[in-house]
Length: 395
Image (tube, rainbow, N blue to C red; front, side, top):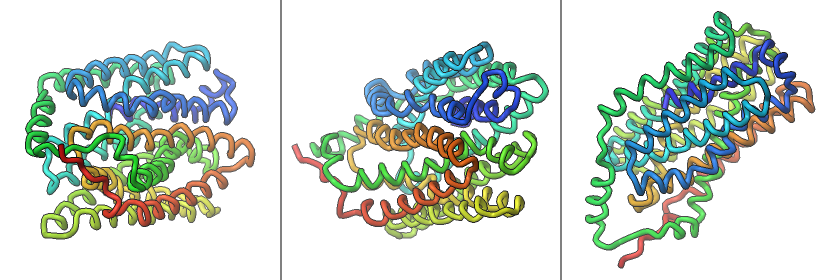
């Protein structure tokens, strides 16, 4: 997951570089489109990718996809037009579409509920450490070797991980799924029934709101720090690392604490839901920094808001697995949730680019993030409730 996010975050650094913008004569709206292009395919392939891993397992579909996305990232070095970059970003999205449905399926069948918060926290921390590592690495490589070599080095260098992947990952999730299905004694949950209660729609809305802020930060934070706050690319890399690494670390700790509370007898739904709402609430402090004229205050709240959102990171994913029964559907349910997550990846870069170009500042984009975080809290409070859990059907 770290590697996947390195390969999807490198474009945001390039789009903040004057030489890259000049080479392609980019407007703010065009920068938004380039940041969004990855998600055009990635978001809409989440459910098909979930079906793929439910049908064929995790290991080999993931390995093939890994090769595809690494090559697409590396080939960006040889582009000369906006159309070529957009095409490669769309292909990158196709390659990476399998990442979350496959990983959530593996966790579902290999990690018990009492440890799942920590497992999901460690896994989802990769979505934060990836940009945290990738942004400063991309800034460093671009400065010393040029943006073309940055894409080539990161894309091809990351592919080395495929070697330990092939030798270390067990190909056992299908067998474990069959064992789990046998224990259900004929009780099943039809996929269509998942959409007959308000719960899944609360999950979808809450997931969109959470990730809108994440994907704004992943795609426009470098440009915001350089253009609005006057930072150098190296200073931007430090703040980006602190924000995303802080979020990843908090995600792991929050998952661990939630697991221990549940192990001691606390209600799993209430615990995970509480952490999720708390994370969205802390994240809403981003508006304080955005509206401040003091750069130091802005930077403090940039780190606090993203790190605080880590309280929700592991728990909002684990909460869905706790509430929705039907292990055989785990890949598809993860696909639904990750579609909601990455649909925000389409909207956030485009809308931010349009708002920034229209208003001339980042204040309007930041205010909209604040509104969405409050909407996310409301979704988890009123819709994601135990009384709306879909019921299994006994054969």
